[in-house]
Image (tube, rainbow, N blue to C red; front, side, top):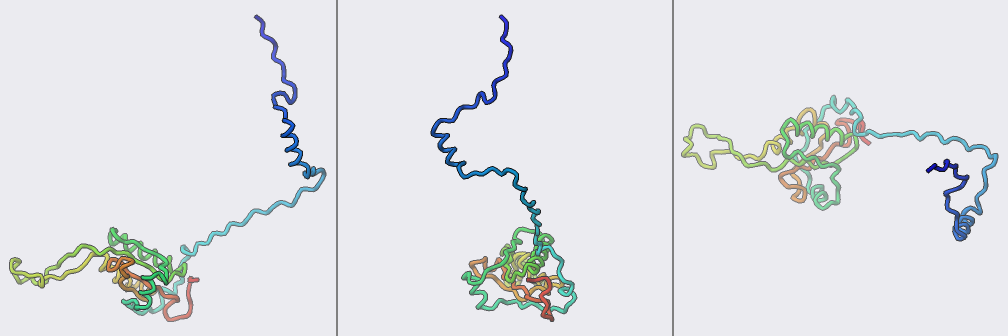
Length: 210
């Protein structure tokens, strides 16, 4: 049986015809449409310039590190602490150091504080964790069997002890105005409020701050 030769479908074949209702709808949609004709093309739209702010990555002014910085105050005034606890004053940044090694924790704290200074942040919450209670022997001459609780010094976790020392260290104290235990709403003894300086110590220059 011979196959019939393939015939090219006529132009427009295979396209379903519009119903009368569709034609009316199409007519209503296109009635106000005008052909462009020989109108000149519109001016090309210039590409938008993308601007990315990297405030937290800009280098800090060297004056922060060369100016003589006073020791940070190891206390948050009651009024400020109460405002922070009630949410009347916001915490700009929370830094969670809990569970990190000392090296990791110091690196995170330092980079976070410097980035906060560049952004113009004012208040930080540093979470250290309360740490497990440990005891150091202070009375080596007394036999172990006869030592009492008073013969041991109790102290908390490593980070809880170290963070205040770091805040008073040469690399961080230029940025720190004061610090102190957080309210119970923010972790109590397991966290610290840290207030940052508004300007470079000893000057009115705010450096890279806003």
